[in-house]
Image 1: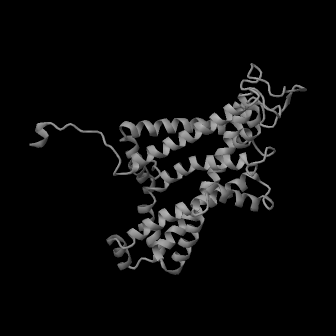
Image 2: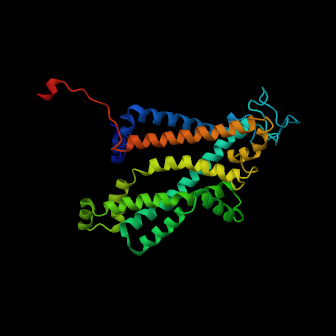
Image 3: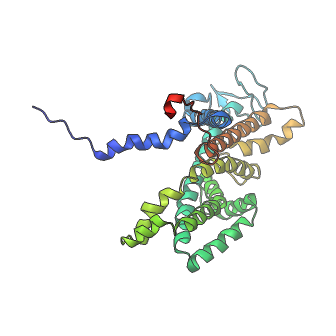
Length: 320
């Protein structure tokens, strides 16, 4: 007789927890559902493009020759170069595909950094209050007063001489822009729930402040963060594009970046060379649109005030 290994209780609770988490998505209806899934498809296409860039791209992002022959400069779309070449004789299609990897890598790093800094600060300031809360609110409000692109430019300029990786520099510059948003959202939400009866009950049974924050408050105030992070990702793409356009983003020797590609191709449009600006610009528009639709769809799906549920038709015998 053989004994089967016991199934952990935690694994048994994982299935129902996941079903509860994804239930609002499954119940989404109407325009919210259309926004959610169209945004997810658009964003998913760029994620796949970024993950499989080495296999999808015909060339490296900085490759300007193959089989001992240099690529033609500013060549129009053809069978050899589907989207043409730019002034550096690099393939535009390769720039677009590898640029998706750069954009998403920078945005993912920036969001991780911003969440790591902004969420704990918002939780602590909102729960404890006092002088720390006042100082943090003053600092975050001062950062909000500065235009986001200008703030990112200053940080990128200051870090450019000390950090060699352009991806890390761009991610840190974008992080500074979004930390105040996560701080304010969490801080305001924690301030409103810290006197709720379930928090008072936790204090009455002897739970410490950080136990209350981690076990009773965190999961009740974190629901808005995924929506905010998705919308911030769309805005971060535009911020990164602005940095690249001005020459403070990822350097061309470190990776392809759509904003830098557009800045190099601005003069080409006046000469009738349209492909060097059209395709990187179209990639920016599509990715930002996908992330925006995904964020708005999540907002209308997860927000109980905006969420629409499927109508259930009741029969007369159900009421008896």
